Length: 248
Image (cartoon, rainbow, N blue to C red; front, side):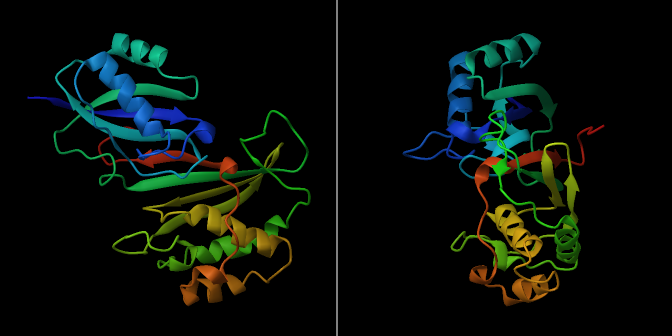
């Protein structure tokens, strides 16, 4: 009987049309599957913890696969040697047969990075803005997000999701030496949700609406009432938690 493994990986999303395999575009999942098939010498279908959009990065992402081959340290080195520079597998974790990288995840966290001085070493890794928005106003609106569960107003339309309900447990802007970072955690996220939330909060920070207006936007359940989606280059999936994995 085949063993199920979780793979923990990270990737720079600049060259890819997101995580998920697509017919006419290169994805992280496609490149990973092809490398695994080369080494394992049998068809591989990885299942990811979720999709990321074109150009979005991940410092922590999980996927699972089934194989009869022992995935040890030697195999890990061979796989990373075969993968391009912008995808790195960190470890393999043997798990129960029914463990599922997508459905078993209990928490997901993202960061969105913004910088305000031209920096060639942050190009395609952060959103370059000319003027700094007011972090205190954005944090007032961000705190309100935790009072709601239906985030239809921040979701891409026609996504075929069963529900637009999410439980946000953290939403906070912090200043760093490079600029601003937005931290957000929830049990699940809708497509384009984080980038739409950031775009709306930046509108608040730029003084285009008061912090309390976020309530009307959320309660409208209308995507056209929220702010524009910010560029993908500043977004990172940073953490995925499972009840049976050690996250210490």
